[in-house]
Length: 217
Image (cartoon, rainbow, N blue to C red; front, side, top):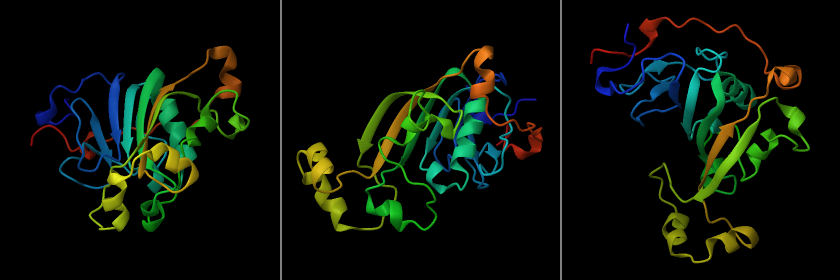
């Protein structure tokens, strides 16, 4: 059975080379499965990301996009470990989260986690606190950005684009940015390291394909 929407036929049919847009909401990307707990027209798989394990096989995903989603979950580390389990070695994550210095990060009452430029360094091999989690990534890119998701008018939104030397002022004076973009590569180890680096094991649920908002639209 073709589980993908008719208007996105370029998505690969293979179940071991998937691309996921986690918490995608209304954002759609060609060849990606939109996973969201909201029953939106754009949702391909309706799934609450706080429910683990995720309904995908180990090493079945080659790329994950998640934009302004991870800050909303209570189980951030557990979800990250699930993302790690289902991602192939060398797979890529592209993640966008609110910047911790941005006023809007604390304004939103549904935000549970907060992110600096160095949050994902805790998941790099050799970090002082790499025992927090078995997840291992190589950080390919970090980028501070000035995008905004809301239409709430604030004075800083008007002033910030006009300020020069943003990186300097961000270090020493006040915040210049609203979000951080991370691009990371998943690092997995050979079998002899599996005890040290294995993630918590959960039985993977079988997805009823009726949960997928699929095919004939």
